[in-house]
Length: 191
Image 1 (cartoon, one colour):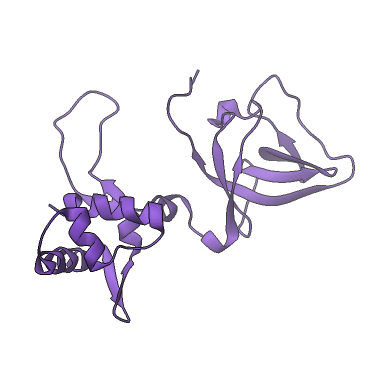
Image 2 (cartoon, one colour):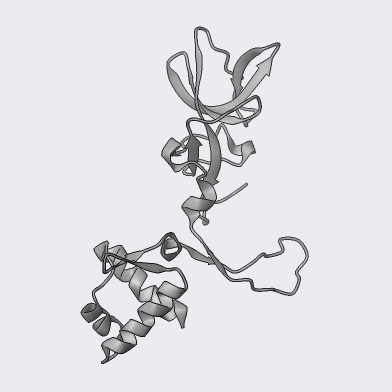
């Protein structure tokens, strides 16, 4: 029942950037009674999907989440167990939203690190990074995504593709952030 109520509200929110009024909900759900709408809303409030702020309805973080139904075996098949909770992707992928941003990857120099052209990478700016981290770097005034390496205390960058050489700074190497997550839509050919 919860999903039957939530799905049309999410669709309305995506289109209008707000939750519908009680009158609009009568049409959305095709019910004749505001009491039924009140019961729907109360169920969503109790479940933590929406909240009432100063007499108005507002979505919570959970409203934007998608169901996390449990785990799935990628090895030998097992019996499925369902354990329903909700997860927002930004909470899962972005630990520090105020210090993070996304970049779209171009090129193939990071394929052996599982980063392909067209992927989105979550970059965290103000964090710690060290040798072997995949970093957003500025090397001699040119920007790139590479693996940070250190040899004898000297830093350089390496690709995750043997077709590319190591990159040693002639003047300066600045690290501007570290990759915290890679996002990819399926349908791409992964070799």
